[in-house]
Structures are given as C-alpha cells and as structure tokens.
Amino acid sequence: MKNLLPIFSFFSILSLTSCGYDKKDIPNCLVDTTHVTYANKAKMIIDQTCATNGCHVQNGSSTFDFTTYLGVIDRVNAGSFETRILLPPSDLSHMPQNTELSSCDFNTLMAWVHQGAQ
Image (tube, rainbow, N blue to C red; front, top):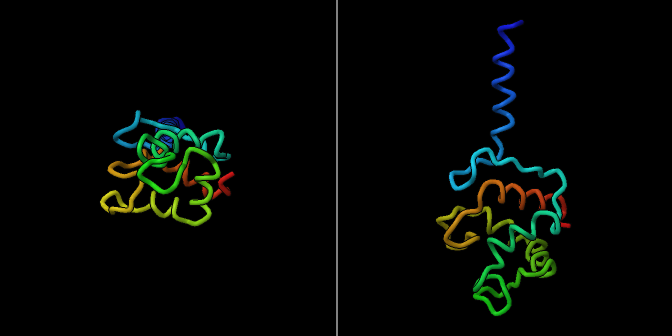
C-alpha cells in the first residue's frame, strides 16, 4: 500500500496542473469553466483580444462592434464567433488575427458559448 502513495500523489498533482497550459501562458493555468457568463469571464477576454483599438470596436476595421454584449451575441448566435476562433491560425479568417488565444482563454470562451452565452 505504501508503494501506491507516490503514484497516487504524482497523478493527483498531474491532474491539477494539466489544464490550459500554453507556451505563452504562466505554466499551470487553471480555469474554472463550470459557470461562465459574459460578465464574469467572457467580457474581459473579448475586451483584451477582440474589442481592441482598430478591430471590433466602433469605427474599427471590423463591421462588428464587440464592445457590448449585444454586438458579440449577434455573432455568437450566427455561429461565426465560435467558427472563427476554431480555425487554425494559418487561416486568414482565424480570430483573433495574427495571434492565438491562450488555451485558458479559448477554453473559457468555448465554455461560455456552449453554456448558452449568457
């Protein structure tokens, strides 16, 4: 039984540290995606990666303004929000352009969309 303790400890630690690591992130990024809402998590990510100067803002290069929930939910309901972030970064239609979401941000946004984008 004592021989199983180190194995159990190893897998316990591994399970706690395996969520959402990306080279660009702080290692061991843990994200709680059990109840994601626009207000509690999605808005912050969208503000930092989509609704940035010159992009998804009023008078930006995009025709869609993501500075409000109504602007984002329109694209979520149309299916293009999820589709565009799922594309490979090499695809010209991939969003956000010229970069990738961190795995933490990606997982959070996917959870938000799949939970009904409230």
